[in-house]
Image 1 (cartoon, rainbow, N blue to C red):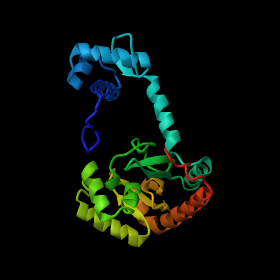
Image 2: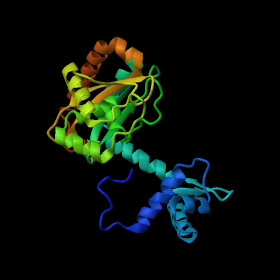
Image 3: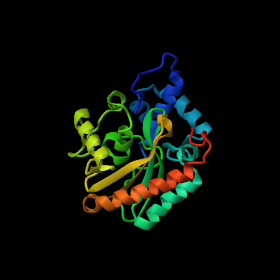
Length: 266
């Protein structure tokens, strides 16, 4: 998703085009020829050829024997660097994985990064539905997830409305909340409950719950923790889920209490 505030005045077109080429290749696991890339990116074949050659030289795309291009290994290296920059310190990550091992449910830590809500840590559990999109760096659909709601609830109404206007309220399922006013009501209910939830709003059949792990005046240092499970199971065990999340949040918060102020900075 392009930044909602529009193009900068000093945008370097060649860099922008190269990234568009990389995105097009990444969205096509079977690979694309130069001509196919050119059509998808609305570029001339000559320009596309030069961009692809440069990306291949730098390791960001790979040319296969049939002439098609796929994503290169350098992309995997950048992803590993992103996850390392996002995640909380090892002691806190260990506690997150322990909660997953004890409950069998996938657990997540979310935070703000550059004004966007992103997943920082993910520990997948065998009893949770598999959610292939929810990986470190995921930054879509904050309004439709419990992690996103818990962080949105820390904003002022004006800040929250601006965030939703910038990043939208995509309809993931028929149950997704797509109006800011309705979301405000949902967030108020979550605050009274002491836990934010979503049922069938991001994925049909899935429920998620989240609580604040660390509150801070600086949005970039705010952390929330959540877990995912079958929706009907969350409905039946909501009180127990809240107690478990709050206990885990306190334990992780204590492990972070002595950290250096710069540890969480990206």
